[in-house]
Length: 483
Image (tube, rainbow, N blue to C red):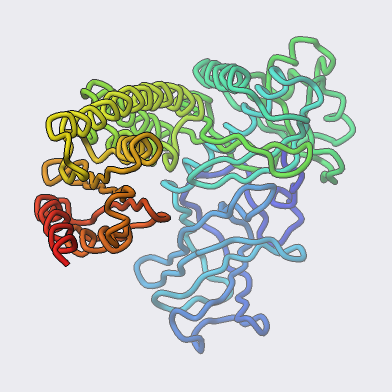
């Protein structure tokens, strides 16, 4: 998978020991680089100054082939400690970048190399997981799938591959299932340096197109010893296993990975797709987060229709869109959420229609009981339903143009208020304007109103002042008519 085989080249100064003696190992310090040149001691270098150290060999992994470098420390007893923040390969040297935290280092010192095992462990999981994912992609999407890049760190794995279209949910499900089946077989992972020409003969071996590999090259096989592959390189059964060129670090057995969860699939360029996935404890964490989101969704779904439910649904929508969880689970939750949103929308339409009828019936009843009245001002028995006000106003502006209405919806209990006015021809002839009338109400209930004469509508910001707004509208009209 990874063409950067330099980290495994034993001719390098301070070559990476791919037999991995573990997080602790004794090595000889060869040279110190202070940013200007090589020196033999750090005695004249201030503590916390960035420097680089070269060893005769190292169990630290230098960044290569998409895998990030190890971090850790070099120590001599309790007297010297060098913090390793990065490891890079330059011009045949492996440099441990960091700083002296205490003591002095000198050429020839024997140091204990301690990479951060807690960090290396998830990197191993993710790297072997990338090999398994690559194999599953080929099985599901076909032979045309080829690796185009990767990133393996302690938090996630990222894999770029050639594919002409987006990977559909059923395909992603199959890819994830195949990957986890492979993981749960607890297959042993084998690695061996092999002559390049001989290694290329192995059936189903995966390599990065156009990449230059060292000779010998390191072959990593998940499930079958490399020597068995070489004895019968064209055996058809080898198609069922992952075999790649790779210089990175891997788990001893696939069961250590625990789980692989795909959290993103996207396009990054024409014909290039990207998958991001989590393994191990990180995979379990996103699964727990998905379970919690599903629980929240169930709670909201069980709520009766109300403005509070609408609010809760919007909050869950936002949480789901931001959540880093299984792509498959997110798709399931989104479908469930879409059904809830549709149900709410349908209920809103039904209620709006009913409230529009209630609003019009209320005003018409008033005028029926008061046939000589030319205006109605009042709070209607409806929610803050702008559409209901609009339809009532439209009725009078088109079918009963002489009469005027100033309508309020919602109020303190709903924590929302809307208001609207239509000035009929009778009041208009007496100098009443919708703008002046609505402005008086907005001063009381807050917010602003808008519209074109002879109508005006607004949404208040102080629903607790709704009753006062009704009184203000009534008083303003009474005073206007006295003039």
